[in-house]
Image (cartoon, rainbow, N blue to C red; front, side):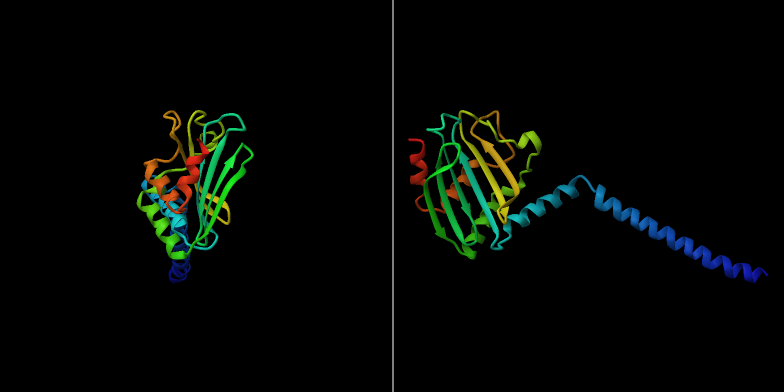
Length: 201
């Protein structure tokens, strides 16, 4: 009789132990996935941003948009430079409805695009954190100066948006020096400096 009880108890005990181990493993996994915070999460987000920047698929692009002071529609100016693995494009605009003034479209190739995005990465372009909600609303920002917006794109949809301005009260989300970044974009289009210089003359 004792042997019979032992034979029944041992499998039940083993089953309960296995269930407890499985539950503990699931809880640990859930905590790791949903509640891992601090340095681990930041590093993960930085790695995702870096991967998005350095990806060289044909549907990827990096874009810089620069807006001038908020003035009358007739005198408002802006420009955009977009670099993809296949194309480099500069468009200058007048008015708030973005009427094109000049457009330069040049070919590009994978090695050139790769060098460009790696150069962006080396000046810590992706180390900045994107703002959310009202803090990322660019309407009316830096009314008397220049607004600089940078985007990483996939199939023309923004994966990450960073911005800053020439106004000290509106520093935005870009936490690196602006000058090397804008120069790197402008250097991709041979005639860019000349066309941009004419916008605010």
